[in-house]
Amino acid sequence: MTTTMKSKLGLSRAKIARARKLAGAIALPVQEFITGHTTVTVERATLRLLGADGVNADGVPVPNLIVAALGGRCSDGAARCYISALIRSGKTPAELNDAVARGVDIAGAEPADRAAIEKKAAELVAAYDRRVADNVARRNAELERYKENIKSPMLYVIVATGNIYEDVKQAEAAAIAGADVVAVIRTTAQSLLDYVPYGATTEGFGGTYATQENFRIMRRALDETGAREKRYIRLVNYASGLCMPEIAAMGSLERLDMMLNDSMYGILFRDINMYRTFVDQNFSRMINARAGIIINTGEDNYLTTSDAVEKAYTVLASQLLNERFACSAGLAPGLMGLGHAFEMNPGIKNGFLYELAQAQMAREIFPDAPLKYMPPTKFMTGDIFKGLAMNTMFNFVSKATHQGIQLLGMLTEAIHTPFMQDRYLALENARYVANNIENFYEEVEFRRGGIIASRAQAVLDETLGFMEQLRGKGLFAAIEEGMFADVKRPRDGGKGFGGVYEKSPSYYNPLETYFRRELKLD
Image (cartoon, rainbow, N blue to C red; front, side):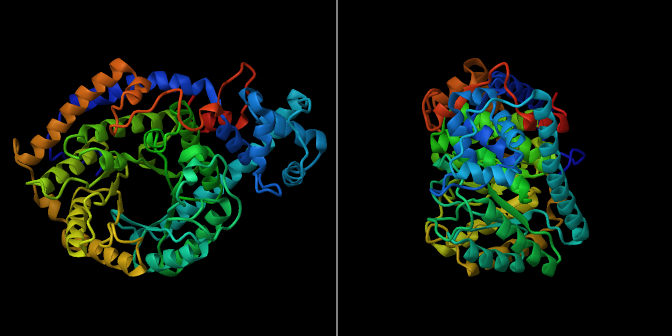
């Protein structure tokens, strides 16, 4: 859908505008906090974008070694230290990285001359800019070359073997079967590691480590498969958890196309400190915005702990807040893959109509966003026949309401991680439905006062009431009180709280300055 398409629900434009205004008021105090603070992973991401890479003999990444040595001086920014070491040593970034990995401490040295630091920073930032610009140009050229084969919605599948080389085989098979988007699920608990593992990996539980080398391996494989299939295959990973900005940085370097990147997911579902998460999501989204990476937000997760009918308004409220925070980080609407899900209890009478109302409402409120629509999982029981029926209804709603990114449901959900044949059947199902209802929805209008239109209007009204409460309490207090997903998180608790620093008056970060200039945020 675009802003010019006709509404089927008749939602009040004034109410939608009011909801966006409330989102701005709720986000403002949080954004002010973000502006005045940095974190250890923001500083490590900055070092990575300046050239810091590699690990020591114990596998500790060079960016971690530098930031750990700086300690509380992270409040001044880590870039000055790294650039000064380059200037004083005369080394290249690769040579300096080797020295740090061998034990050379660069944190205690006197800063170089300010003018020299500015000159070297400009050189390093320009090198990063060229690489990202090349990645964006390559993606756009491939999409233009194969534009006749782009589907709507894009069909999205996951691979999760734990071994990057096995992931490649499964991803190639999925792409040949018709997948447009492949996500490599991360190994369990990587989001709670305060470092990014290094190199290609062949072990993992329920997924594969997100590393820069694994990104590079999968990117190359999908490019080769896409060339044979005459389609551009998008690659997805997770810019979330304690290393959110660092993984975004690596994704920008290796031409990932989508990143799971929510403003509150880590707080609510991984118990990561809220101050840390809000600062990290902002920097990671600036990186994604410059690299043309679509973010996927995580509102579907709310419906795993809350009822999808009773708490539908929390999904819309979160979408509006994610949109506001994304705007503040420079993301255009076309890069906002706002999330939601087909997760109502299948035993509810007229549940399909409620699902259709929710999906159509999201489409009409966010007309230019490539919405990320998630399949049923909560009520999948292992009955593959019922599961196939539920997935078919989900595929119908997704195609009919013009969702942008459609994660395909597996008929074996709740039994095991997908086999290749499960993905094949899911792709067949989605393509069958999409082909048979291609123009069906244009033939249909919803009755004023009917179940679908009334349901959407009721959810919008409930969302407005909820957001009025959020504005009164403030977002930090609302999270403490469990107003999202029925999960309570203290503002001074959670993982990563010790890695948050107030910026000093002399804080220096040439990448942040670069992003703000390129994204026109000043």
